[in-house]
Length: 126
Image (tube, rainbow, N blue to C red; front, side, top):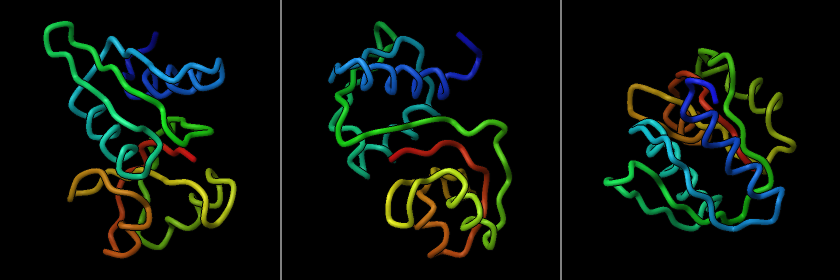
């Protein structure tokens, strides 16, 4: 395991999906990971998640998901360069979501383009 909680969690989710499991228990959590999971839930990649504060873990159910990965290194992206990274990481024009950290919190690449703001690339899924 690395020191990147988000990358480890997304890896666990991807491996569970590949092995045919629907439920995943993530033992290392952070507030940043919870924000990433909120975006994934909004987009339907995760059906539900439950935070267990006593055990410091998250139990989640995988939804409509094929691939999810953290972006390393976390590139800083300007508002005009989002399209370049979307083409680099996502398989098609209308398929997938880039998660971008902005001064308004974690948002999808479509929201960032709509608000004309840039930020830091965190992860992608489709």
